[in-house]
Amino acid sequence: MFLENRRGVQRNERILISVISLCAVIVFAMLAVQVSGADSKEGEKKYIKWVEFDVCYSALQKALDEDIATHNQKDPIPWTETLAYLGAKYGGDFSRYKPKDMDAYFTKRREGQTQADITADMEYYNYYYKAYSAVLGGLVGSYAVELEDENGNKEIKQSYGLKAFSPIAQGYSYSHYEDFGNSRSYGFKRKHLGNDLLGSIGTPITAVESGIVECIGWNQYGGWRIGIRSFDKKRYYYYAHLRKDHPYAAGLQEGQVVTAGDVIGYLGMTGYSTQENVNGMNVPHLHFGLQLIFDESQKEGNNEIWVDVYDLVELLEQHRTSVYKQEKEYYRKYPFTDPSVLNYTGG
Picture 1 (spheres, one colour):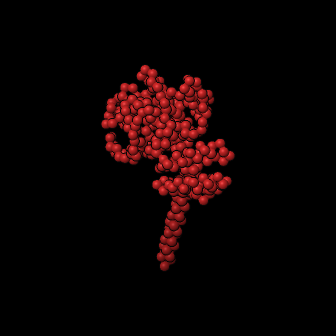
Picture 2 (spheres, helix red, strand yellow):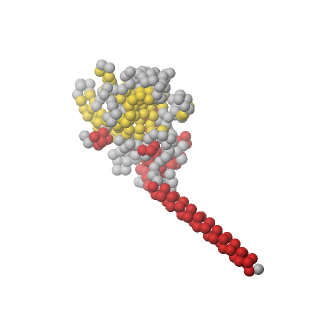
Picture 3 (cartoon, one colour):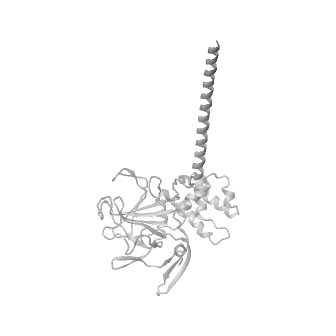
């Protein structure tokens, strides 16, 4: 009887020890997870991971017009604030856009309501403001252009408005359609992450926004191409399929600062070839793309953010660079001063 009791006690002790050990393991595991989670949360960078930009041309133009009209007033209405408000209102879906919604917003601003008051109950307003500012941030502002009257007298005109340019120079025709997201199969199946502007070989291509030439050279997909990064590092403009044999403006090189509207290259049909300097495209065109970068980890790889630029190209049509030809090169006709270039270069 004593032996049986003793065995029972030992068995209970072993069970108790096992339970205590199991509890200890569970508690340790929970602490490990909590510590790991805390470290991960504390060290994790917070930046926008995705943007879908589908603001229609009519909304862009109307917001831009109000931005320009109110620029010198006590309470200007920047177009980024207007469009971010509507983005938050529509959940980013501008197929719901109605001009009267923008008019109602303008009325509130003119009556003295602040942006903070109007958007106080909009949970995602800050997201849309950051996202749309990243897309549009360098397109509007002050600038100066040197013009010439009929007598040949030069005059510097100071302006505020759309300081970005169409990628196609003045006087050259092109056509385009909404092709963002269309399927592409050369090399591997993927989506088309830009807008193709169909034109004639040799058409002068101009920089949309001032910035730094970050990439220049050959790629089997894009052919001869140029990548220009905005000064704030948030936008990367991609110009691809440039002309065979003479793709770039004379002297253009990596690291160079370019001003919006400068001639940077010439339309062609290169690419889709593992061999350099080959016309692999079926139709001459410029592939124009815009990548957003909120963190350098998004520059290359699976986390890249490319936005639809079709409506932006439509908007930029109103501001095209006048060019002239000298020997085999084209140059902008009217000198243009962008304060952002002066701020960056210290000039």
